[in-house]
Length: 260
Image (cartoon, rainbow, N blue to C red; front, side, top):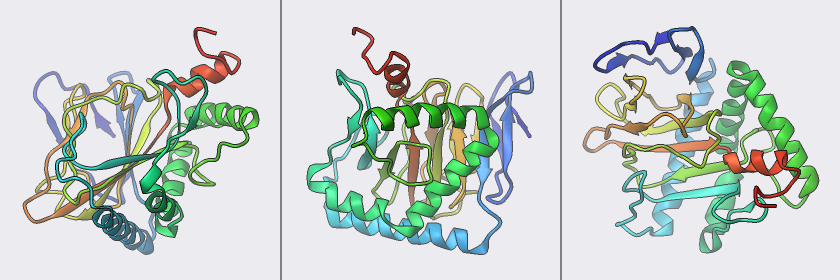
């Protein structure tokens, strides 16, 4: 168990990819989880295959080198169901010219395996949250049957593929995500996690080693987070699953907007 009750400075948490552990507050409440990876020697290799596939698709897409946004200086594509920014109803994100790339990645067996593991781990560590998501999404799909999940065995309706080969994020919060829910982040690449590519949870004052194929759950809307860069010459990307908080509100409002 990693405690986040230190009063000053940042604590360095060593994270073995196969060694899951919760991050708890001073009252013993789990606020985030380093979920590790399955005890299966083929899983890390599958994640490396996913890394190679995502990297190759990113190179083929010929993204603008100046791709920069508030999360970092790398190309990122969100896939799946979202809601917010004036939408009347939840809808699939439109990726137009990138649709073929997105479809290939979402259909990749290696990517599906990562997504499935993250959802199963979420159910293990936060069963009530998982059920909360599941019940709301079941209602959503019943109301809007044309909407489909990215992955058949994942409770998360939206996914971010972070391309570029040298992915590390600026200090930020994902304010449109469910504020009390967790997003699942999986690190991918050929890098030494002891030298770089750490994840920093600023309010918790934790500086966490984050190796290839490992997954971490954090309340990304409420905890400020960022990464350190990987070492020079190394490659790292990330795969994230999440839920827009507005979807839950829309369902709870009887499938209506707040204004309606």
